[in-house]
Each structure stands twice: as C-alpha cells, then as structure tokens.
Length: 246
Image (cartoon, rainbow, N blue to C red; front, side, top):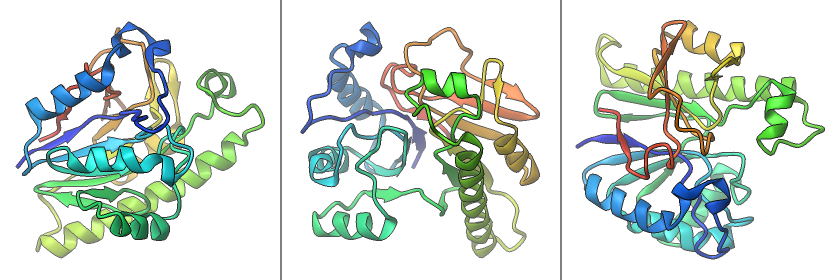
C-alpha cells in the first residue's frame, strides 16, 4: 500500500481546455496521465493531488472529471489550486460526492489524513511577491498579505488536525512523518514565503511537495531550504507519472 503525489491534473473532460499552451510536453497529456497512473498506482494505493485538479468553472462541469478520477486505481486526496473554480465548501462538496456516488476521492481542506506512517497536511498557499503572482495568473488587485495570512491559518488548522490523528493512533505521538502538500510553492528559486516556511519549521515538518509550476524542467527534483525538502510535483514535471512518497 503506497502513497503517491502528482499535482495539476488539469482535467477538462466537459470543458475541452487545451493545455499545449504550456508547452509540448502537454500534447496528448490525458493519454500520458492515464497510462502513467495505471502503470504506477494500484487499488490499494493513495495519491495526493495538490491543486488544479479540474478546469471546470462549477461542479456540474467538474462532474465528468470527478467520475474519471474516481474510476482511476487507488484512493485520491485532493486539495484546491488557483484554477479549481468549481471548488465549493467542504459540506457541499461532500454532499455532491455522495449524491454522485464518488467514493474514492477525499478533500484536503483544514483537515488531515493518515496513510500508513505519513500524516498528510497542507493548503493551497499563495505568492507574496506581486510581480511573480501576476505572472502566474493572479488578479492584479489581490491583497497578497491577506491571502497568505488566511492560507497560513488553514495550514495551522491542517497541522493541528494532523497532530490529533497522530496522537490518536500512536501512544507516544511519534513515528509518523508529517508531510505538507501545497499547490503554490512556498520556496521556488529566489522566492521564499517566510510565513509558510516558519510554520512548517515550528511543527517540525521537513518535507513539502508543491505543484503549479509548468514548463520549467531545469529545477532540481528536491531543494533543501531551512531544513525542509521542497519537491516539485506538477504533472508535466513528473512526465505524468505519480511520484512515490513512501
């Protein structure tokens, strides 16, 4: 029973959104994604998808994508990205998943999950650098400090939920590795979001996976900053093959 991660599936079965604008690696990406998933993941495994799951604008449009994802092998834990406009409240989405017989997808939002010896926590994240955020399709009038403060709060909620999961399952409260999953990278080249880094350091998190970055393949598969491993897992970076976490 393995744990995998792959961000940015960018499913668009109902919207037919082309992805080749992000580079040639995206040509025929649905076939690549389908093959990579089936060749790697079994029904006993779990895959975390940290954001940009679907291009849909609402749940009705996203339904075909959710059914497709639900039919893929394994359990899936998904979180929100900047393009997941279909995302609604946990209460509404949970009800819609049940109503549409979606059984293998869980939502990561102000909560946490335990898969074997890994505690899964995380949030969407955001950029604090206005120029960098703008280059990544952020609204020009975004209040970056406010968004990061909100996402920092959500990260804390998730981590605290993770601590409860760990303490409930382990007498000593040790042994499980708490691992963070972001959509936006907290650390990327010369950019650092100190707020997210400090929270992870406070709670002793030493590994963080992130997506969002497309068409950039010269960054290393792991960068250590302030004792934390930052690992890029956008689907095109991984050649549409889920990366094993443990």
